[in-house]
Length: 219
Image: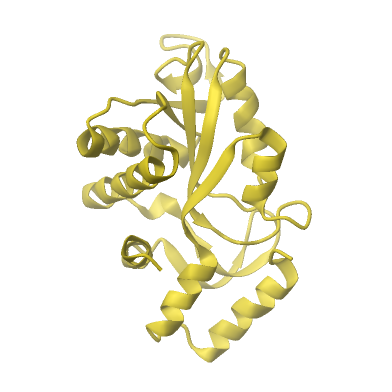
């Protein structure tokens, strides 16, 4: 596994964002691990998070895009710090945009926060993690409704490597359904392999993770 991925795994653990235990996911699945990007709360953590996203987007999709879009709510700070980091690291001004859960009818009215989206914009969507693809069902129509735009791709921090609604992984299902690329900074199978090598996942936890993937993993 590449050095930057190992650094990102350590960063998730140090920030207490990636945890192991017993968790019930939004999808109803019982999982032995959980990632909560809402726990990136300090200036240093957010600065590093933005840099990891910016580097991953740059390496995966290049510079030919205009807007980074973060779905409410956890995608909002991710889109902001990614736009800041992209300017710092690569010298290109990227606009940020997010949606509100409820449209505002006064002042800065509408469904969007940040930059408006206009015809011709090329957009990268950023999320923390995608398990079932449900959030994209809400996000993509909002983005497409803003004009004649192109969604370049989706970047998440962690690919959980489990099935979405069918037998394919959630990221692959999104790619097939909407026709744009999907990627992650790191995949969970890489995380597990790295932490087993470091002695941070014992046999009992490894067996629980294996059992989870036997039930929900990509076939």
